Amino acid sequence: MKVLVVVAIIAIVVVVWAVWLRGPEVAKIELSVEPSTLVADDKSTAVITAKIFDAKDNPIPKRTVEFKLSYLYKGGSLKESKMTTDKDGKVSTTYTVGTKAGERTITASAGDKSKIVTISLTEKE
Image: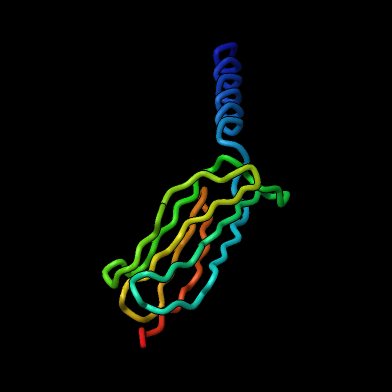
């Protein structure tokens, strides 16, 4: 019986410690892109900003956010794909267009949450 109690206490301590180290769970991601329409000229850029929040709508600092770009084969790139949020739960990266028109989606993920934004690329005149 004593062994069971000790094991249960150790399990509780490990779980509490793991949650404390990891911090609060990500409940929501806000994701924006500015501008959302660009010319596919191999040089235009857009800023993608993610903000992450816990269940009480508080920003979560020092949490890793990963950005993924769709359609890599059509060109375009992200300046950084994995970053850590600031004190306001915010992180930004820059997307540089390629030369192919169309839509690109960028996904931001943190914890088990993710959000997608779309950028429209128009033909260069």
